[in-house]
Image (tube, rainbow, N blue to C red):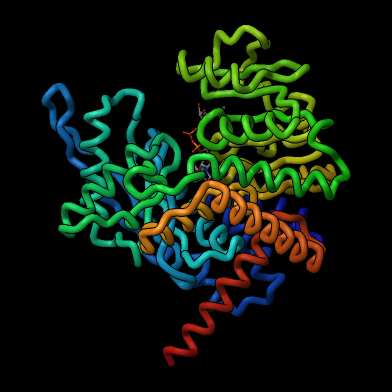
Length: 429
Ligand code: NAD
């Protein structure tokens, strides 16, 4: 099956940077490979529900300001919706739609009983005090509360939201239903029903996916140079865990700039500097580059772990790595997929590589509902087991259809959701 050129031709005519179109292009290739019936094709590529809310909050100055928030539920065939909430100035409906659909596919790949959702609020958290962020979070929770619930839709952190945000959501929801409901969100502090290992889970999953891909390429971690874009929950933790496994992390970045040291960064020292100064700039033992230069650095593995649309038709032909492991959601455009594939660069796709986070979120939801909490060793070993078998399932689907891992991951995910949809609709009729 030649997936690359077909996707490239269509991508050129679409808006390359529209994440929902990027999702749909890959979905269409997978649906065609699976021979998916037209009706089901339409069902699975259309979000079930999209909610837009206005969130009025009082700023610290006393002024009233209205923010806009979204919650998109893509598909609930396999179970309640699951998906993060991001706070950022450039949040938009197409992005949230794409992220929701990717959650459906991701939960299907790791075979956990959830559908996909995503939420976002248009705001700049850097310009807001902690008290304002708390009021915004509580207002947003009230706005979307009618469609939330441990058996309906369970949010989690994403860009610029963290365990404090989750604690505020849990508290707001619990106040309104008049009982403590820990399973309403995941990614909470451990003391209020969070899971051990959740904070590190996405980075740990990225590390496991990278290790499995390296085995296929005949490379060893200790001989592998890695460039990591983004130093937050995914990139920072991923870099630290990979550093501990013996990889040489030659570059890390944040939204302001890039550190580069061809001999390898002292990742714990870099993260300590970041913690103290709130940015990487000023760390002494590395060159400081522009972010546009980072993705073109010579390395073996590139881990984009910041945001969407980073590897595009404009730079995919200049990237110098053997393997891309996608920590972020949607970091590679569909047009760039084809260029990387033609160049023989293997891509471990986002919906597999960063699925460690939702896997441990699932563990958190299970623990909250049982009221019984696991040790970190149990969490990590169950995560390891799920990530390795998901990697093997995606690899097998890709091989079976003669496709890239990207298209293989969609084939696996879409097929599993379609099977459940057919079972449930037969049952209902
Ligand atoms: P975060 O807010 O903790 O960190 C984001 C990091 O990226 C920060 O260091 C920021 O400075 C940096 N950044 C932003 N724009 C950049 C740019 N242009 N160049 C370089 N660095 C840049 O967010 P996160 O939770 O680490 O999420 C990162 C990505 O991973 C997002 O795409 C998110 O959807 C995805 N993801 C997160 C999780 C999770 O559990 N947190 C799970 C799956 C996927």
